[in-house]
Length: 302
Image 1 (cartoon, helix red, strand yellow):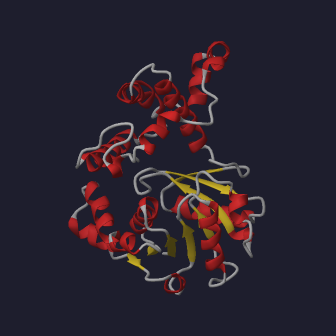
Image 2 (spheres, rainbow, N blue to C red):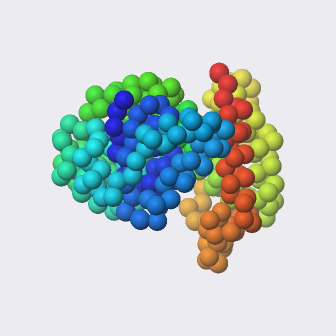
């Protein structure tokens, strides 16, 4: 059992806490926003209830997760740190600067960034060798994959220790050879999202149609056969021919009017009641339940 400190108690922070607690570890969570911290217990219980966990087991898991009132309070009770604050370099630098003066030089620090360069995140750290990129997928207590990556100055010993710890929790770890923004999964995911937004901007279809195509075709295929295996399966000659024909028509845009239109009207998605789709009350919880049920159905051995 390891005592983890989690800085950031939002969507990913509370989910990581649940994943750690389910594996028998203890998690102390701190968030600078009092409202986020106040809702921590409620969100953790709701996550466990979505898993149809018996009330007795819910109590065992939640007992391993506690809230810290301040950063100094958190560091007194931990052996490793997970940074799960918003994906902004300035915020991460502020948090790491405040943290490093309070913890031993040998304490591991994991960053849950999945977008930023870990080397950039580590800039200004007194001990950048102990920072490891450990990207959990949402929801962390359901999805088995965790991406682990080094920064330019990371000591590989800390990378190895992170992989061993996560493997011991039953997670599937992939270890990147080097630092790259977006790791593997988000580079693939957001290349697809960019193309989906391009289809909207070109008025090819509506958002519901895009989701239907994904859920009823590619989503079914990719849960069993990945893109590299599929390329070999259909033949690399056919894959090359398709790319030769299609690649010139794919989006290379770096601005996204399909997002700016709802954002400029104050619609940010689920939390605001609207975005690319409409989000009436209750739909967010229904989607969260459907997402977790779907992931569990697809958890099969390759």
